[in-house]
Amino acid sequence: MHAAERIEAAIALKRTDPIPVAPLIISFAAQCAGLSQAEIFSNLRKWQQALEITFLRVGTPDAVFPLWPRDAAKSQMLRALLPGEDLEPNAQFQYKESEVMNRSDYDLIINKGYQAWFMQYLPKIRSDISASPVGRISMVLGFIQQGIRIKKNVTYWKRKYGIPALFYSACYPAFDLFSLARSLIPFCQDLFICPDVIEQACKTATPGIVNMAKIPLRLTRGRRVCIYPMRSSASFVSPKMFERFVLPNLIQMVDFFVKSGIVSVLHCDGNWTPMLPYLHEMPRASCIIELDGMTDIYKAKDILGDWLCLKGDVPAALLAQGETDQVDEYCHRLIKDIGSDGGFILSSGCEVPMDAKPENVAALIRSVHGR
Image 1 (cartoon, rainbow, N blue to C red):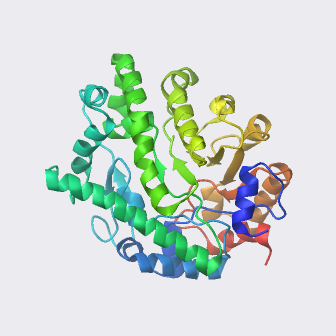
Image 2: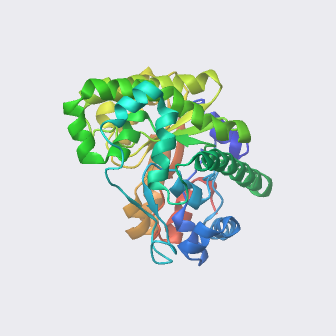
């Protein structure tokens, strides 16, 4: 069974031997390869070279991150600060969160649709895009070009290593998107000042968000999409708020993709333990649930183990500060307790930190693939 088959089997909740292993490697690749962050953010080929060297040092995973880091940073709903441009050449890329979206924008979305609002919003966080008619054309071309780069990247890794991308497009639920665009404190205030308006705006925006996410999927013919409900966890909202503002639209997104034969990778940063029972409302075997260590993965196994594939959750601190035998022990415990009956992908808890020890990342991959 090759890498792609192991990933597909895990999604289908089937047992595999070995289980799939797919740590999320982005910034770590530059450090591991002896390159600067600025190099991998400014040159796609340098990014590929960094991963090639990293795979030689730590082993080859069963799936790869599909986006060039520059595209990943620029595709978020916040202003991106990039190494070598806004930051020192070897700095970790960052986001600057500020109140860019206005409260009145909810009504704009309700009355004119998500895409009309998005075309006005993006130039406010991207200095390389203008709000003019020509700028709007460049936005559309930019999305297409990004999809082409994803396709080239995916094809490269499939031909060279025989490994698939974990996903081929990405998007936010409307709730999380608004939280980022408004910024956290104003958005939390909005939830009490105009909850009905937010609820309607989320409902209105969801089809448009899904349609935009389908563009790279069409270009790549990929069958997995990453959804980032990172501000829908109990670290930010109560289960009651989750049930009202997030769950209906998240279910709708997953259902939209399921009808097209697409699996959703839910990137569940934060504490999702109180929200886990709600995820049973997703169709069986329709999602990969990525956990970062803040969610109790054992409770996730108890609640969702026969329903959705789990992925995680070797902590960033352990990879950066721990010893190799500690990483090995943690991984084997997950393999035995969470993955022994299928439906599990061993991974880092969110991204492998930039300062992770290469020997620890190697131990993670080696716990599955051996030496």
